[in-house]
Image (tube, rainbow, N blue to C red; front, top):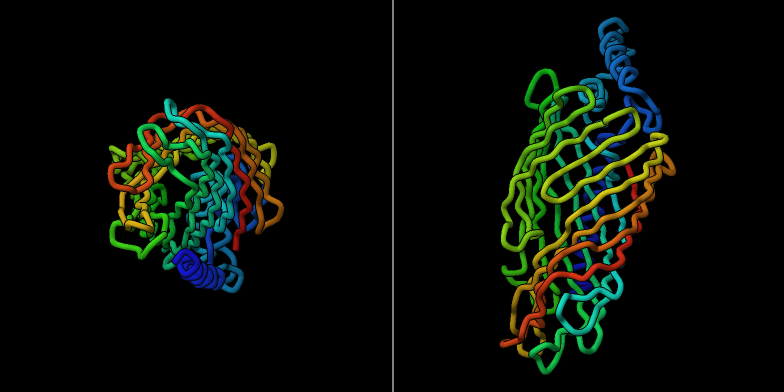
Length: 360
């Protein structure tokens, strides 16, 4: 079942990637204005570039103006899209490591290896809006010691694989003529499970969010919205509140409560030094193959990190982050009836991530 699901996800990814390659995509570079992803510009230069584009559109002969959807979208909203958040690749391949981790008060320990595939490609449908398509495969491989989960149990919690996999569907639209208010909605329906037996309806979930991004001044973007996911076990529905602010040229802060905070310094448009914190987690439906019992488990990690992001070319990027698990909460079970759950706060420990990104 596991390998069949992987083939299905891979097929969906290839379809989405093909669609993205054939449609105009939106640059997500933090500082680029216009077509160059590596052009380092100041705020004044960015305003001058946009003003110059408008002037050219009204004075140049018709044949010299880019009237394509992409050209008109970039003309009206390119600076907004480039500055509203730091660079994010369209395709992200990630590997994460959390070694020798313990649950406070529980015997034993575990190593966690994460392996992620994340694809999100925007496709323009008008000069004021776009659709987003994508797919994801978020894997967690847990390798446990023999005594992990044995408190109150005759047997512990053995090695396991947890998977979140599905598709991404969404849209974004500018709501005002000045192009200062962007409304986005995205849903990521999929299966969150160990995929040991036949997938049932309990395995499926639909993490989603809706967000307004409002530019109040050239370098400040206010964000408000709502989200549904299982990062917080007792609060799947929470508001989003945050901002992105380029405080001075090359130094920015991106906050999206209740899940992330990051400071970044960009000595060039292709290189960023990152310092931040993030909260990740999910709920998974697990099975016991012998007795076919079912139950839910919850994982959550709070990490603080230092990182380096570099654009190696127009189409490729690399991100390395390392830091500490500073908090978190686990609620684990083997799925067996009467199992005394292993639950509690995570001890502090090492955390690292490597990521390779691709832009089409």
